[in-house]
Length: 127
Image (cartoon, rainbow, N blue to C red; front, top):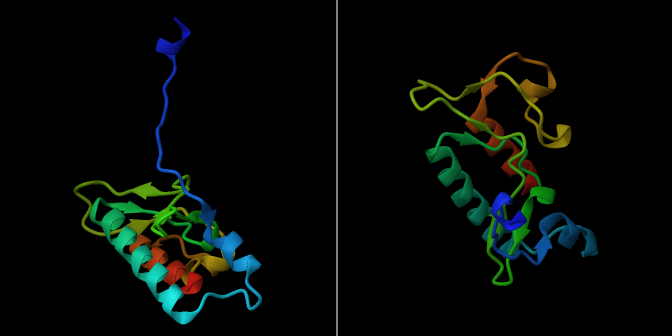
């Protein structure tokens, strides 16, 4: 039976991508109350990922999805990095995110950087 050889992922349905929503707005930005709500959800999601030792490294509007209830979901963990469980810090050595959302230390080519701070910086740029 071919079905036994396949793996299926069941995921929550998301109706839109923040980037697409922004592009449809005349000023290309959300009202402050709406941006605040999405930003708080983003920080909650990052706090959870970071508590597990996961650094996303590519936070941007194109990687933020919304459910039908307007719940924000962080997507595209393709360049994310899981820290060693026993690491004493969050130092990373590879950056593969989107340049427009990367912090100065990556832009100038530093060989190592704080992974958690990268996510915080790109969240601020996203806001």
